[in-house]
Image 1 (cartoon, rainbow, N blue to C red):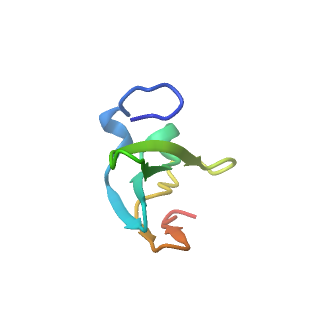
Image 2 (image 1 turned 90 degrees about the vertical axis):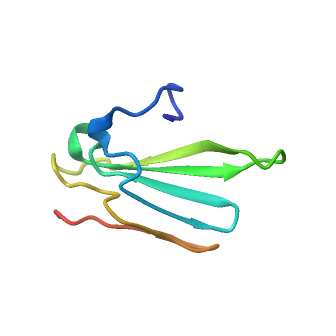
Image 3 (image 1 turned 120 degrees about the vertical axis):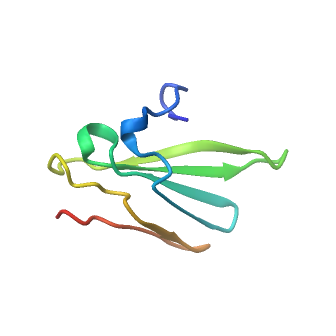
Length: 86
């Protein structure tokens, strides 16, 4: 789900190409989002134990086809994302 519009990302975004979690946060890579520049979605578990999108990390200034988010690794303190075409 896109945090800004409430809509589901299009299939071409490759939403779910990578995922990992750390603590009560879950990160999902979408390397095809935004003209293939890529994006990472951050989900958090609420008080009712349901997951919801709380933010997305875009790639300002990256070139077309960069595929940011093709891999994601997280723990309770950090999240790291792959940027293979940089």
